Length: 321
Image 1 (cartoon, helix red, strand yellow):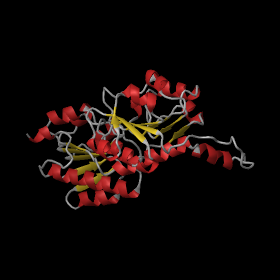
Image 2 (image 1 turned 90 degrees about the vertical axis):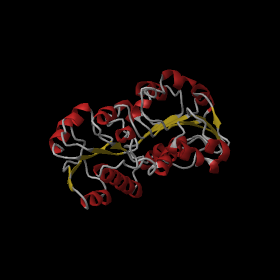
Image 3 (image 1 turned 120 degrees about the vertical axis):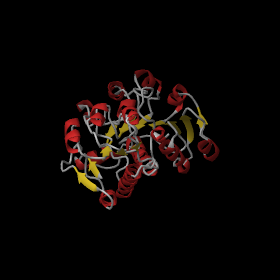
Image 4 (image 1 turned 45 degrees about the vertical axis):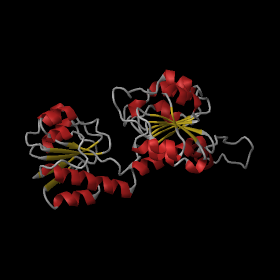
């Protein structure tokens, strides 16, 4: 069968697919438009796409031979799963493999913001460092502080467990109790308002849904401590970016660390100009090991789906009922 891959991914995944099917990879190293996807995948039975691709009802309905969609990401809000399900097309994602990698990146942001690492680096490179000074680049301690986890799924749980070495008090918000966090680090389940008021570090690990869109806005930011650090490695629209800009400009919170943005890849000019925010280019899972594992998982999902089997990471298993 024919498989179209919307952008170059690690060779380990491509080679796995090539063992069984004819594979075409987009030659354009950028996000494809919907029209480009429809044109280049017109004869494809399999579509291996990225989180940045828009695979909506129009795209799915315009690919007459489509039998399987493998998303190279944990999230799949870029795919119209409802339309795919109606057309009996399985959709898969790549969960689990990037859990620790993304949690590590979130911790890197915590330290970068709390200890003003990026700001200090620029300070030195600009020739401003003239020697030790008692008030130079004062940041925030991490050890024994309160860590607030919003969303205790795989990544949120990994993020919280990695706090053990810093003897932190951990609060979490989640629909269900997390027995692992409660037994291993004595984490406490609470409501969002309480978590925001009590936490020194607030880190977001929720999927993007109607309920989580702008979960953190002006009202929520007002609840946070002036010394608090806000981290987002989940999805950009979970935070109201304009409200966050105002909070950072007015020093309502100490700082923020962002790997994702509301209108990604666009980053507001004002955000780039602020010293109390660290901004990254969506690199939560960007290690060689993890990206290769993601490619292999997406390829394996694709092979299973094209073979008429339920993919190991199928997000719409009702297709097979």
